[in-house]
Image (cartoon, rainbow, N blue to C red; front, side, top):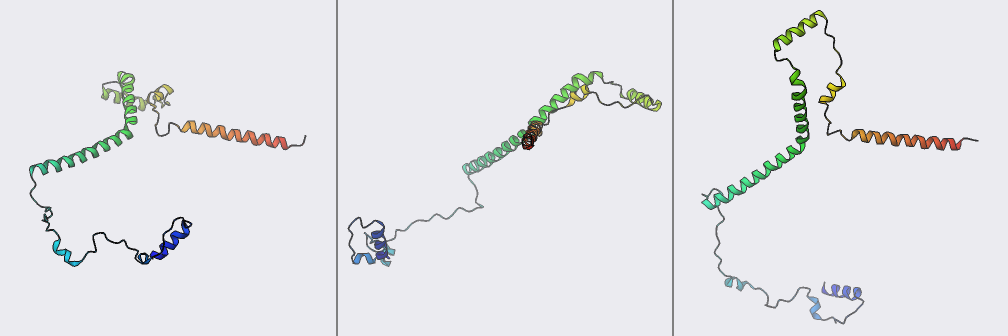
Length: 184
């Protein structure tokens, strides 16, 4: 092994330095400075006092309780904050939209609602029975009052517009090419 290593080194370093072969190359392992280990050294091994590993069901001291409870509560707090953060990320836009719609409702619709529901219902029933009440479609104003931008698809119309534009450009381009190919 040592000889093989030495020959490799000779080849790879282009014989840059002068290290002769000798009997010491037969041993690849390094020589120990202190001398080799022998079994008599067992007796000189120092006696180490070993502390037994702590039992899992031992009675905890006050400091240990403080430490473990603190760690656990910190972890729980972190998890709760993470959950709350993700929830807020998911719901803050819809919540804001809901609040907006609610306050619009209170401002525009509530004043015009009849508070006497029984009279209201009786009146409606009477109207329906006479066939006076026809279903009319919702007006644009009423519709716009409660329309809220859907934050999932808010960019979709822009994307569709761009795609349409791109398709139109392609069609134009092909039409021009075809016109070029026509004989004069």
